[in-house]
Length: 370
Picture (tube, rainbow, N blue to C red):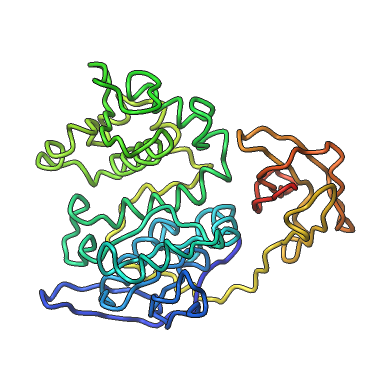
Protein backbone atom coordinates (compact mmCIF):
# COMPACT_ATOMS: atom_id res chain seq x y z
CA UNK A 1 0.00 0.00 0.00
CA UNK A 2 1.34 3.44 -0.91
CA UNK A 3 2.26 5.41 2.19
CA UNK A 4 0.94 8.93 1.69
CA UNK A 5 1.61 9.84 5.29
CA UNK A 6 3.31 12.89 6.77
CA UNK A 7 5.82 14.11 9.28
CA UNK A 8 3.96 15.36 12.31
CA UNK A 9 4.12 17.47 15.40
CA UNK A 10 1.51 17.31 18.14
CA UNK A 11 -0.64 20.41 18.37
CA UNK A 12 -3.10 21.09 21.17
CA UNK A 13 -5.25 24.17 20.62
CA UNK A 14 -7.71 25.50 23.21
CA UNK A 15 -10.44 27.90 22.16
CA UNK A 16 -12.35 30.29 24.37
CA UNK A 17 -14.94 27.67 25.33
CA UNK A 18 -12.19 25.30 26.48
CA UNK A 19 -13.06 22.72 23.83
CA UNK A 20 -10.07 21.24 22.10
CA UNK A 21 -8.73 19.99 18.80
CA UNK A 22 -5.95 17.44 19.09
CA UNK A 23 -4.18 16.67 15.87
CA UNK A 24 -0.94 15.29 14.51
CA UNK A 25 -1.00 17.65 11.56
CA UNK A 26 1.26 20.59 10.73
CA UNK A 27 -0.07 24.07 10.05
CA UNK A 28 2.34 25.60 7.53
CA UNK A 29 2.59 28.92 5.72
CA UNK A 30 0.81 29.01 2.37
CA UNK A 31 3.36 27.74 -0.20
CA UNK A 32 1.31 29.09 -3.13
CA UNK A 33 1.38 32.84 -2.56
CA UNK A 34 2.53 33.31 -6.17
CA UNK A 35 -0.70 31.73 -7.42
CA UNK A 36 -3.34 34.38 -8.24
CA UNK A 37 -6.08 31.98 -7.14
CA UNK A 38 -4.47 30.97 -3.83
CA UNK A 39 -2.43 34.04 -2.88
CA UNK A 40 -4.89 35.40 -0.30
CA UNK A 41 -4.63 32.37 2.00
CA UNK A 42 -1.97 32.55 4.71
CA UNK A 43 -1.88 28.96 6.08
CA UNK A 44 -2.49 25.45 4.87
CA UNK A 45 -2.41 21.80 5.91
CA UNK A 46 -1.72 19.00 3.44
CA UNK A 47 -3.52 15.87 4.60
CA UNK A 48 -1.94 12.50 3.83
CA UNK A 49 -0.12 14.03 0.90
CA UNK A 50 -3.25 14.30 -1.24
CA UNK A 51 -5.80 16.87 0.05
CA UNK A 52 -4.91 20.48 0.81
CA UNK A 53 -6.80 22.72 3.23
CA UNK A 54 -6.17 26.47 2.82
CA UNK A 55 -7.21 29.02 5.44
CA UNK A 56 -7.80 32.73 4.95
CA UNK A 57 -6.47 35.24 7.52
CA UNK A 58 -8.97 35.45 10.37
CA UNK A 59 -9.85 31.74 10.29
CA UNK A 60 -8.61 30.32 13.59
CA UNK A 61 -5.97 27.61 13.77
CA UNK A 62 -8.39 25.44 15.73
CA UNK A 63 -10.93 25.55 12.88
CA UNK A 64 -8.29 24.78 10.26
CA UNK A 65 -7.03 21.85 12.34
CA UNK A 66 -10.56 20.62 12.96
CA UNK A 67 -11.44 20.55 9.25
CA UNK A 68 -8.13 18.99 8.20
CA UNK A 69 -8.39 16.35 10.93
CA UNK A 70 -11.84 15.37 9.66
CA UNK A 71 -10.42 15.10 6.16
CA UNK A 72 -7.65 12.85 7.47
CA UNK A 73 -10.13 10.64 9.33
CA UNK A 74 -12.28 10.24 6.23
CA UNK A 75 -9.31 9.29 4.05
CA UNK A 76 -7.64 7.16 6.74
CA UNK A 77 -10.72 5.77 8.45
CA UNK A 78 -8.81 3.17 10.48
CA UNK A 79 -6.38 5.95 11.53
CA UNK A 80 -3.19 3.98 11.00
CA UNK A 81 -1.41 6.89 9.30
CA UNK A 82 -1.85 5.51 5.76
CA UNK A 83 -4.57 6.44 3.30
CA UNK A 84 -7.11 3.63 2.94
CA UNK A 85 -7.46 3.76 -0.86
CA UNK A 86 -4.23 4.15 -2.84
CA UNK A 87 -6.11 4.89 -6.06
CA UNK A 88 -8.06 7.70 -4.43
CA UNK A 89 -4.93 9.22 -2.96
CA UNK A 90 -2.98 9.21 -6.19
CA UNK A 91 -5.92 10.62 -8.13
CA UNK A 92 -6.47 13.46 -5.64
CA UNK A 93 -2.78 14.30 -6.04
CA UNK A 94 -3.08 14.28 -9.84
CA UNK A 95 -5.99 16.75 -9.83
CA UNK A 96 -4.54 18.86 -6.97
CA UNK A 97 -7.55 18.49 -4.67
CA UNK A 98 -8.17 21.58 -2.54
CA UNK A 99 -10.67 22.58 0.13
CA UNK A 100 -10.60 26.34 0.85
CA UNK A 101 -11.74 27.77 4.19
CA UNK A 102 -12.95 31.35 3.81
CA UNK A 103 -13.44 33.87 6.60
CA UNK A 104 -16.89 34.77 5.25
CA UNK A 105 -18.93 34.78 2.07
CA UNK A 106 -17.61 37.32 -0.44
CA UNK A 107 -14.23 37.56 1.32
CA UNK A 108 -11.04 38.65 -0.39
CA UNK A 109 -9.75 35.07 -0.64
CA UNK A 110 -13.03 33.78 -2.07
CA UNK A 111 -13.16 36.51 -4.70
CA UNK A 112 -9.52 35.97 -5.66
CA UNK A 113 -9.94 32.20 -5.92
CA UNK A 114 -13.12 32.33 -7.99
CA UNK A 115 -11.83 35.05 -10.32
CA UNK A 116 -8.49 33.33 -10.96
CA UNK A 117 -9.50 29.68 -11.12
CA UNK A 118 -7.40 28.40 -14.03
CA UNK A 119 -8.27 24.72 -13.67
CA UNK A 120 -5.00 23.85 -11.94
CA UNK A 121 -6.79 22.46 -8.89
CA UNK A 122 -9.98 20.60 -8.07
CA UNK A 123 -12.35 21.94 -5.46
CA UNK A 124 -15.86 20.57 -5.23
CA UNK A 125 -16.95 22.43 -2.09
CA UNK A 126 -15.89 25.23 0.25
CA UNK A 127 -16.15 25.94 3.96
CA UNK A 128 -16.78 29.25 5.73
CA UNK A 129 -15.41 29.94 9.18
CA UNK A 130 -18.87 30.14 10.77
CA UNK A 131 -19.70 26.64 9.47
CA UNK A 132 -16.90 24.99 11.45
CA UNK A 133 -17.33 24.20 15.13
CA UNK A 134 -14.36 22.49 16.84
CA UNK A 135 -16.27 22.28 20.12
CA UNK A 136 -16.99 18.87 21.64
CA UNK A 137 -19.21 16.94 21.33
CA UNK A 138 -19.37 17.23 17.57
CA UNK A 139 -22.80 18.02 16.13
CA UNK A 140 -22.72 17.20 12.41
CA UNK A 141 -26.02 18.94 11.83
CA UNK A 142 -24.51 22.25 12.98
CA UNK A 143 -20.95 21.68 11.68
CA UNK A 144 -20.73 21.58 7.86
CA UNK A 145 -17.20 20.13 7.78
CA UNK A 146 -18.21 16.50 7.29
CA UNK A 147 -20.55 17.30 4.41
CA UNK A 148 -18.29 19.67 2.49
CA UNK A 149 -15.18 17.53 2.88
CA UNK A 150 -17.05 14.42 1.71
CA UNK A 151 -18.32 16.44 -1.28
CA UNK A 152 -14.70 17.28 -2.16
CA UNK A 153 -13.37 13.73 -1.75
CA UNK A 154 -16.30 12.21 -3.65
CA UNK A 155 -16.52 14.89 -6.35
CA UNK A 156 -12.80 15.21 -7.06
CA UNK A 157 -12.05 11.52 -6.55
CA UNK A 158 -14.62 8.73 -6.56
CA UNK A 159 -16.74 9.96 -9.46
CA UNK A 160 -13.63 9.84 -11.68
CA UNK A 161 -11.75 6.74 -10.55
CA UNK A 162 -14.82 4.48 -10.29
CA UNK A 163 -17.04 5.87 -13.08
CA UNK A 164 -19.29 2.84 -13.54
CA UNK A 165 -20.35 3.21 -9.91
CA UNK A 166 -20.08 6.94 -9.19
CA UNK A 167 -20.04 8.90 -12.48
CA UNK A 168 -22.37 11.89 -12.33
CA UNK A 169 -23.30 11.99 -16.03
CA UNK A 170 -25.12 11.17 -18.13
CA UNK A 171 -28.19 10.66 -15.94
CA UNK A 172 -28.80 7.00 -15.19
CA UNK A 173 -25.39 5.83 -16.46
CA UNK A 174 -23.84 4.93 -13.08
CA UNK A 175 -25.06 2.87 -10.17
CA UNK A 176 -25.12 6.04 -8.06
CA UNK A 177 -27.46 7.85 -10.45
CA UNK A 178 -29.68 4.80 -10.85
CA UNK A 179 -29.92 4.51 -7.08
CA UNK A 180 -30.77 8.20 -6.72
CA UNK A 181 -33.52 7.91 -9.33
CA UNK A 182 -35.10 5.20 -7.18
CA UNK A 183 -34.69 7.29 -4.02
CA UNK A 184 -36.40 10.29 -5.71
CA UNK A 185 -39.21 8.20 -7.15
CA UNK A 186 -38.15 8.78 -10.75
CA UNK A 187 -35.53 10.42 -12.93
CA UNK A 188 -35.94 14.19 -12.58
CA UNK A 189 -33.27 16.31 -14.24
CA UNK A 190 -34.42 19.26 -12.16
CA UNK A 191 -36.64 19.76 -9.14
CA UNK A 192 -40.12 18.39 -9.87
CA UNK A 193 -43.29 20.20 -8.86
CA UNK A 194 -43.82 17.49 -6.28
CA UNK A 195 -41.95 14.32 -5.45
CA UNK A 196 -43.84 11.00 -5.51
CA UNK A 197 -45.08 9.77 -2.14
CA UNK A 198 -42.68 6.81 -2.27
CA UNK A 199 -39.58 9.05 -2.53
CA UNK A 200 -37.27 9.34 0.49
CA UNK A 201 -34.85 11.85 -1.06
CA UNK A 202 -36.64 15.03 -2.06
CA UNK A 203 -34.16 17.81 -2.72
CA UNK A 204 -35.83 21.12 -3.52
CA UNK A 205 -32.99 23.59 -4.17
CA UNK A 206 -33.58 24.68 -7.78
CA UNK A 207 -29.96 25.89 -8.07
CA UNK A 208 -28.74 22.30 -7.65
CA UNK A 209 -28.73 20.37 -10.93
CA UNK A 210 -28.86 16.59 -11.38
CA UNK A 211 -25.12 16.10 -10.80
CA UNK A 212 -25.21 18.33 -7.73
CA UNK A 213 -28.09 16.26 -6.36
CA UNK A 214 -26.07 13.05 -6.84
CA UNK A 215 -23.29 14.47 -4.65
CA UNK A 216 -25.84 15.53 -2.01
CA UNK A 217 -27.48 12.10 -2.14
CA UNK A 218 -24.14 10.33 -1.68
CA UNK A 219 -23.41 12.50 1.36
CA UNK A 220 -26.75 11.74 3.00
CA UNK A 221 -26.23 8.02 2.50
CA UNK A 222 -22.69 8.00 3.93
CA UNK A 223 -23.70 10.18 6.89
CA UNK A 224 -26.74 8.00 7.66
CA UNK A 225 -24.65 4.85 7.47
CA UNK A 226 -22.19 6.38 9.95
CA UNK A 227 -25.04 7.00 12.38
CA UNK A 228 -24.32 10.72 12.78
CA UNK A 229 -27.87 11.79 11.87
CA UNK A 230 -29.67 9.34 14.15
CA UNK A 231 -31.27 11.57 16.78
CA UNK A 232 -34.95 12.58 16.96
CA UNK A 233 -34.04 16.25 16.58
CA UNK A 234 -31.88 15.77 13.49
CA UNK A 235 -34.28 13.28 11.90
CA UNK A 236 -37.11 15.80 12.23
CA UNK A 237 -34.98 18.68 10.96
CA UNK A 238 -33.84 16.93 7.77
CA UNK A 239 -37.01 14.98 6.97
CA UNK A 240 -38.17 17.43 4.29
CA UNK A 241 -35.07 16.52 2.30
CA UNK A 242 -33.94 13.09 3.55
CA UNK A 243 -35.96 10.51 5.47
CA UNK A 244 -33.45 7.71 6.13
CA UNK A 245 -31.65 9.21 9.11
CA UNK A 246 -30.58 5.94 10.77
CA UNK A 247 -28.28 3.13 9.57
CA UNK A 248 -31.13 0.65 9.91
CA UNK A 249 -33.54 2.71 7.82
CA UNK A 250 -30.89 3.17 5.16
CA UNK A 251 -30.04 -0.54 4.97
CA UNK A 252 -33.67 -1.64 4.89
CA UNK A 253 -35.00 1.01 2.51
CA UNK A 254 -32.22 2.06 0.13
CA UNK A 255 -30.65 -1.33 -0.53
CA UNK A 256 -28.76 -0.20 -3.62
CA UNK A 257 -26.91 2.79 -2.15
CA UNK A 258 -26.23 0.85 1.05
CA UNK A 259 -24.53 -1.90 -0.94
CA UNK A 260 -22.45 0.70 -2.80
CA UNK A 261 -21.18 2.66 0.18
CA UNK A 262 -20.42 -0.47 2.23
CA UNK A 263 -18.58 -2.22 -0.63
CA UNK A 264 -15.03 -2.66 0.72
CA UNK A 265 -13.59 -2.18 -2.78
CA UNK A 266 -14.29 1.57 -2.54
CA UNK A 267 -12.93 2.13 0.99
CA UNK A 268 -15.64 4.68 1.77
CA UNK A 269 -15.52 5.76 5.43
CA UNK A 270 -17.74 3.77 7.78
CA UNK A 271 -16.63 5.26 11.11
CA UNK A 272 -17.69 8.85 11.88
CA UNK A 273 -14.85 11.33 12.44
CA UNK A 274 -14.52 13.26 15.69
CA UNK A 275 -12.02 15.93 14.67
CA UNK A 276 -9.20 14.23 16.57
CA UNK A 277 -6.57 12.69 14.31
CA UNK A 278 -3.40 11.14 15.66
CA UNK A 279 -2.64 7.65 14.30
CA UNK A 280 -2.16 5.15 17.10
CA UNK A 281 0.59 3.05 15.53
CA UNK A 282 3.03 5.89 14.98
CA UNK A 283 3.31 5.58 11.21
CA UNK A 284 4.88 8.91 10.25
CA UNK A 285 7.33 8.04 7.51
CA UNK A 286 7.63 10.60 4.73
CA UNK A 287 6.63 8.98 1.46
CA UNK A 288 9.13 8.72 -1.38
CA UNK A 289 6.35 7.86 -3.80
CA UNK A 290 6.60 9.65 -7.14
CA UNK A 291 3.50 9.75 -9.32
CA UNK A 292 3.54 8.54 -12.92
CA UNK A 293 3.21 11.28 -15.47
CA UNK A 294 2.18 11.70 -19.10
CA UNK A 295 3.90 13.97 -21.63
CA UNK A 296 2.62 15.72 -23.59
CA UNK A 297 -0.80 16.19 -22.07
CA UNK A 298 -2.83 17.33 -24.05
CA UNK A 299 -1.75 14.73 -26.65
CA UNK A 300 -2.86 13.71 -30.10
CA UNK A 301 -1.89 10.24 -31.36
CA UNK A 302 0.87 9.28 -28.89
CA UNK A 303 2.37 10.20 -25.54
CA UNK A 304 5.23 9.25 -23.24
CA UNK A 305 4.32 7.44 -20.04
CA UNK A 306 6.80 7.53 -17.14
CA UNK A 307 5.73 5.07 -14.44
CA UNK A 308 8.20 6.36 -11.81
CA UNK A 309 7.48 4.63 -8.45
CA UNK A 310 5.00 2.22 -10.07
CA UNK A 311 7.62 0.93 -12.54
CA UNK A 312 7.58 -2.65 -11.19
CA UNK A 313 3.84 -2.83 -10.42
CA UNK A 314 1.93 -1.71 -13.50
CA UNK A 315 1.05 -4.27 -16.19
CA UNK A 316 -1.70 -2.55 -18.16
CA UNK A 317 -3.41 0.74 -18.91
CA UNK A 318 -6.97 1.59 -19.85
CA UNK A 319 -8.44 4.83 -21.16
CA UNK A 320 -12.11 5.60 -20.40
CA UNK A 321 -14.37 8.28 -21.81
CA UNK A 322 -16.63 10.59 -19.79
CA UNK A 323 -19.32 7.90 -19.71
CA UNK A 324 -16.98 5.38 -18.08
CA UNK A 325 -16.63 3.31 -21.28
CA UNK A 326 -13.19 1.81 -21.96
CA UNK A 327 -12.09 3.14 -25.35
CA UNK A 328 -8.46 1.98 -25.35
CA UNK A 329 -6.38 -0.59 -23.46
CA UNK A 330 -2.84 -1.88 -23.67
CA UNK A 331 -0.63 -4.43 -21.90
CA UNK A 332 2.56 -2.72 -20.74
CA UNK A 333 6.06 -4.09 -20.39
CA UNK A 334 8.79 -2.64 -18.15
CA UNK A 335 10.35 -1.08 -21.24
CA UNK A 336 7.15 0.63 -22.39
CA UNK A 337 7.31 4.41 -22.33
CA UNK A 338 5.71 5.35 -25.63
CA UNK A 339 1.97 4.78 -26.02
CA UNK A 340 0.44 5.04 -29.49
CA UNK A 341 -3.32 5.57 -29.48
CA UNK A 342 -4.33 3.58 -32.53
CA UNK A 343 -8.07 4.08 -32.08
CA UNK A 344 -7.94 7.77 -33.07
CA UNK A 345 -9.79 9.04 -30.02
CA UNK A 346 -11.99 12.04 -30.58
CA UNK A 347 -10.83 15.27 -28.96
CA UNK A 348 -11.98 15.55 -25.38
CA UNK A 349 -11.31 14.61 -21.77
CA UNK A 350 -10.51 11.01 -20.80
CA UNK A 351 -9.41 9.06 -17.73
CA UNK A 352 -6.20 7.04 -17.98
CA UNK A 353 -5.87 4.26 -15.37
CA UNK A 354 -2.94 1.96 -14.58
CA UNK A 355 -3.53 -1.55 -13.28
CA UNK A 356 -1.56 -4.26 -11.49
CA UNK A 357 -1.42 -7.98 -12.36
CA UNK A 358 -4.38 -8.45 -9.97
CA UNK A 359 -6.37 -5.81 -11.90
CA UNK A 360 -6.11 -3.34 -9.02
CA UNK A 361 -6.33 0.30 -10.04
CA UNK A 362 -2.96 1.72 -8.95
CA UNK A 363 -3.23 5.19 -10.44
CA UNK A 364 -5.64 7.32 -12.46
CA UNK A 365 -5.22 10.71 -14.07
CA UNK A 366 -6.94 12.88 -16.64
CA UNK A 367 -5.83 12.75 -20.28
CA UNK A 368 -6.75 15.40 -22.82
CA UNK A 369 -6.88 14.48 -26.51
CA UNK A 370 -6.59 17.33 -28.98
